[in-house]
Image (cartoon, rainbow, N blue to C red):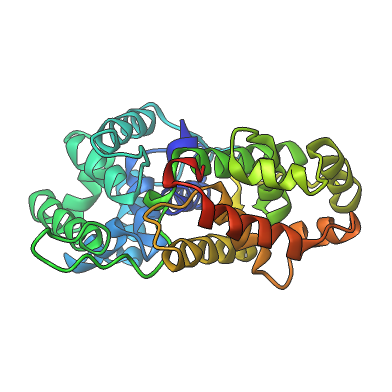
Length: 312
């Protein structure tokens, strides 16, 4: 299920796990999710919580005073049944827009809909009106979307920075595959090497075809990656992006804007990788003696000669 969650939503869930661990609980509930959404700091939910006066430190104190400590020492923190219900409800909310991507506002809306849950109880104990919070959340959400979907009466201005909703379906699959590979490698951080392998894995994608035309083979790249990077401890259940991957995503969107494209496809991701001056993907391609300039030339020529439907 979490493969459909945005990076910020996943970060909020991981922070909720830390809140549960701090209070010695083995499961996260909706109160921990409220704290995690607030601790994330930058998402729509965090901004809405901050706007209505929710204070993270006071919220933590309120949660401990209300429910105490669990005294359940465990390395693995799993979702409680009410948290699972929230995830499913957030998925249903996110399905109303395309592409399907659960963000922090979807999680908070699902929490607010669970009137008997601990999340709503925590908010009430903290003096926060759920109704007022929902209104503020929708206001923050609309402001966030305004940069992505301008009103038809206004000049069409593309967003200045990367947002997961800008990904094409295939590009989104590439990033989810990269997370899957990261878990298989036993790592907690998604690196550009996993993104490169995932681009090759999606053989229907334009990026995969161009990489293979320039001599790259998925099995060979993956074997070298295992040899060079090795296996990790895999301490996080849900891997997070490295700063190089985030730079790749930003570079991919800037490339799309430069060509006048409205979505990020696999080829944009590839050009985002090639713009980096470091990272695991470039190191692997250097070991394989790949001509990066030739790949970039092929990619840019493909954009110039093909229709938008073929960008993948």
